[in-house]
Amino acid sequence: MWTGIIQHYRDFLPVSNKTPIVTLQEGNTPLLLSKSLSQRVGLEVYLKYEGLNPTGSFKDRGMTMAISKALEKGARCVMCASTGNTSASAAAYAAASGALKCIVLVPEGSIALGKLAQALIHQAKVIAIKGNFDDALTLVKTITQKYPVELVNSINPFRIEGQKTASFEVCDRLGDAPEYHAIPVGNAGNITAYWQGYQEYHNSGRAKRLPKMLGFQASGAAPIVRGKVVSEPETIATAIRIGNPASWKKALQARDESKGLIDEVTDQEILEAYKRLAGDSGVFVEPASAASVAGILKLHTQGYFQNKRGRIVCTLTGHGLKDPHIAVENIEKPVSLPPDMDVILKAIGF
Ligand SMILES: *Cc1c(COP(=O)(O)O)cnc(C)c1O
Image (cartoon, rainbow, N blue to C red; front, side, top):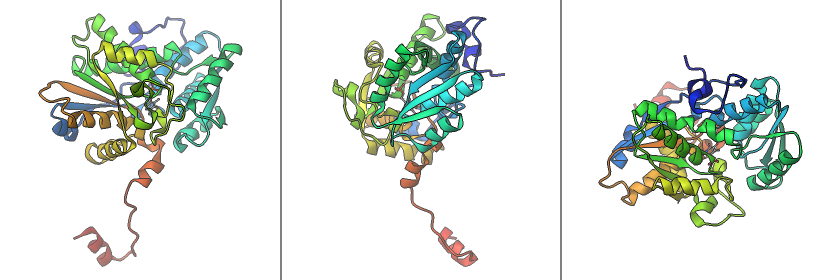
């Protein structure tokens, strides 16, 4: 029986018998072979569908660790800045702990409605600030340094520890690490975590290979690609709308040590991949998640995978139902007809 990532991978995690484990049985997410993407790219393409975690994003892997460790330490309250999913996850795990209060700072107007609903229904104290994510994180860092509140953003090392278990799952399923791992990059915690996970599995002898890490930022929020802070990041992919990533240096390290790359994809490329994933692979993700697939499609067009062999794993970071209005804006609206058999049959084309 699956009882969450801490139980399953505890030998690789900084927990002891004294750590009270707060879990919603996160992890163990599907790794799906996409026929249509494999055909297109010419290598086997797998989708690590992290949208199927308890709160609908990979953030749960890190949050089970961060909340458990906060509780072990005797904390009463946790706090984070969020583009949405961190707040949803922190609020849910704080609720599950039965002991922790949760406060979240979000950029007003730029978080998806589903995520805001989650944080609120899980009883977090949500404060919207008239600023962006980077402003929110700066405030949270200062407040958590001065007051008895635990920071649960991904600069909390326990978050990275939990999130690295996704690479363990990939290796356990494939029997080794893939040749390539593609991933969206926002605050850059996740690319850092995956690379750490792959290295630890490699060092322990459980994987023979190390993948090339392929990170993708949205063009309007691509500070790492540009090599400078973006003061007003813009993209429809709100989860990666970040202009000054906290784990910037570690992302560069993951890129360079793995001989991979960090590139950008436009909102248009993100939307095309988003629709394609839903339409051709049956997988509904939020826009930010589609950046990994948009990225490998871009690299394919440039000939990057030509004459290459092996497997590509794309992390799909969050569920499509988080952000339904993006879907509704990008589809053809259903026709409305009278309840008449002939009219309906004609519309179907029978
Ligand atoms: C948090 C998040 C990201 C970005 O991850 P980082 O660790 O900040 O790089 C991407 N997609 C989704 C859906 C997220 O929730």
